[in-house]
Image (cartoon, rainbow, N blue to C red; front, side, top):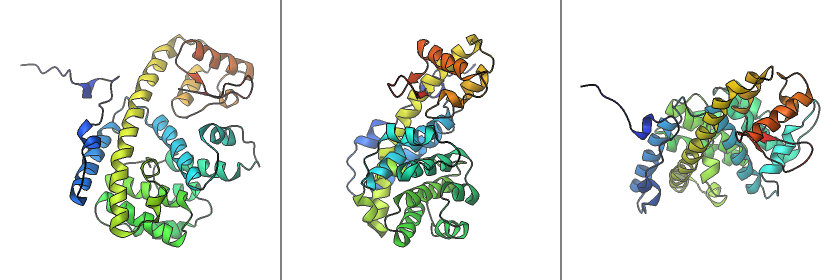
Length: 296
């Protein structure tokens, strides 16, 4: 008998959704909460291993959301649109401001495989020895390990939520054998959770993973469908340098025409972006007539 798979797991367009019982079940005990977070991580592990999911783009989109959450925790007013603007048009020597620095930290943390060097680049004010020391605080299974790292960072730097959450995600990724940081805890933890310690913090981290996993899986499915449509039209794009431009769209949350250096000129880049919008595979994100940004 020849086996022919027709399950949703094998469908390159439909990323399997997180089972409803993971997010809808009312977990009363720490054991139940840990069970649900483990189920969520197991499902998420399958999703982030899929070749048809644009993993770089997914991490970039989640980095923006994580930065927005951190900025909110800091009591600042900037949201996604302002964060994009803060970094999209930076010139050498420009300073992006506090909110922009937070966004840059998350972007740099997710761009390259995890290492202390990469984390130092993301967190330039923190030394390599200190980062390694904090990461060594994490022991045991993935979520308790990440919670221990988060607690260690915030014990030393009580208001540095960005550092704590990035390193907690790095510890989780390392424990799970993932190559890159995937923003999760910033999506699921509330500011009040960041004041907790020990068992209370571990419980909050378990709950946060269940909530964040559902959001990540939805975003992965959405981006997978959009990326597939972009790849389908890519062979029809006749502009010289189109392949390089498409690759940039598949790795960045937002793209300014000036960053499409594979195209021949700024005018060609703007026309290329407008063409992608006409084809329905890219969106203009700002609503402006100038200084526009585009994204899948």
